[in-house]
View (cartoon, rainbow, N blue to C red):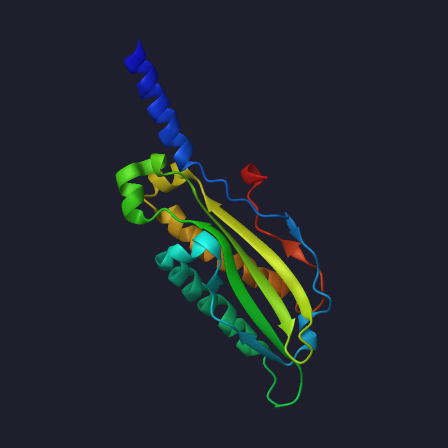
Length: 188
């Protein structure tokens, strides 16, 4: 009887350790203080990370690449030819991250837990230092989906976080309307 209890306790502890408690602070981002089309120049800074998120360099590199691929062509198209005008600086920072790598997913399956990421985009008017927007984005990959896809949904999460931020910038270019964090229904 005691062995069964200890086994059950051990399994419960292992499953609890796999739980991902990463959630965004908001489900809807407020509009920027002004439309992004008011700026003539755009500068995308390299991705940074805070806290424990700094430790997962593989995932951060993939997010950085996805941001470059999705945001840079878009903001380059918005760029004005003249030297005059205001510059909007885009500062991406990952504040929370749990990424289950493909190897960990293959070895642990669903027991490796879900993956999740919270990333913020701070938009700053370079000439004044004024924050135009401080948007937050969230994506996750469910444990079972990750197991079924052998880590494909975990890797896809790193691309979706860039897509959600790209959509926010696109929707706020002509008029300041805000936008969703990308929060999944089951994580609300």
